[in-house]
Amino acid sequence: MGTTSLKSPNRKDGSSSARGLKAEQIHSEVEDVLASTPFIDIHTHLFSPAFGKIGLWGIDELLTYHYLEAEFFRSSDTTPEEYWKLSKGERAEAIWKALFVENSPVSESTRGIITVLHALGLPTDASGLREARRFFTEQSIEPHIRRVLQMAGVSSVVMTNDPLDPDERNVWMNGGQNHVQFHPVLRLDRILWGWPNHWQQLASEGYAVDESASGKSLAEVRRFLADWQKRMRPLYMAVSLTDSFQFPDESITGKLLSEAVLPSCREFGLPMSLMIGVRRQVNPRLRLAGDAVGKADLRALENLCRGFPDNRFLVSVLSRENQHELAVYARKFNNLMPFGCWWFLNNPSIVEEVTRERIELLGTSFIPQHSDARVLEQVIYKWHNTRRTLAPILANAYQLLHADGAEITRQMIQRDVTRLFRTNFEKWTGLRAG
Ligand code: FIX
Ligand code: ZN
Image (cartoon, rainbow, N blue to C red):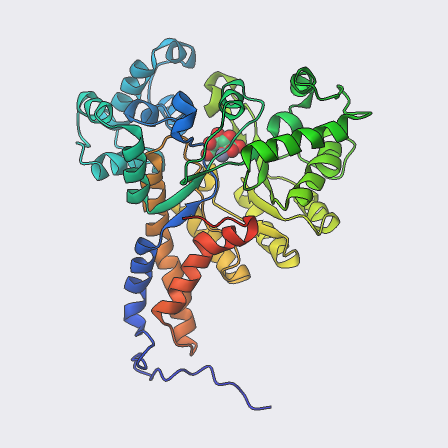
């Protein structure tokens, strides 16, 4: 059988054929494709304007982000109890003083604020927040959203929507939302692991469920999911699971997942997103900032992917120590789509390690990043950083390919970046994002 020579018309000196790039052109082409391709942000805690005040934006929300609150308590004598007594504005001012005036904002999250202020043309060395606050009060939300997403290079964001959250439920029961740049997701934490505290809410809404999820409960949970699928039109269903998650097991979580939620995902053709590895409230005094991370037993994921071959699993794991096995599992199960460098992993040093091993093991069949943004303007820095971190990693992959004999073209790079940041997700969810 004739051998297919990998040697492109590239000549030894690195020059190239008419279409192929020279080795030294690759990095700038990758940067340009990353900069000019609008991404889909597949997991955020952002909300469209229909949700009113649930949607966070502006400098006081940016500074009181729980990532920054955690860092604040390391650089201030203020105790959490004293901090929580302050107003939102006072908290923001305390964080600005401690992390940006008295110390250098060199952490990923503090530098992110500098990135946002600079991008919006605001001073990054102010002693206080007056000018920034004035800027944001002058913005009206719709054009501000369009401008911020455009600056972030994001065409649309995927929300996290909890049908049992009273404020959110109110919006959905009164017409919901249809903003073209915000896509809903049915988040099921209060059902899947919060059942003991929330089954009665379902019962009060007319679903015949009981504390042990027995009798008609599973059928009624499916009716609940069908009602919300119709009301919300989610792109996927989702749950965050702790590092101790096991499957199968005798828990209510396992029963609801296997006998109600996964069958509903199949019924409606929706992926199930599993975000595994959080250790909740290791320090409750810090409230939302009090969660940490633990290495999970991914046998649970293996059992789910093997046991439910007709379900598609969109998975992010929180522990750095779980990343390599997640990528190996993705090689074994094509109904498993790894995504993102989640939360404590979203730092250049770890993003580089995780993304390189995913490319080496999975090619372009994964989703490199999501922002997890809770405050609108965070997408500016989170995607600025993602593009900056990924450019050398992708360029390196093409430079290796080029050195080993393949022709590299801009068309290839565009196809691959589009797959990584759009098509993999669109194909998995049936989304035709703008
Ligand atoms: O479960 C989740 O969606 C987590 O991302 C959040 O609970 C977490 O607080 C967060 O925002 C991390 O970035
Ligand atoms: Zn999240």
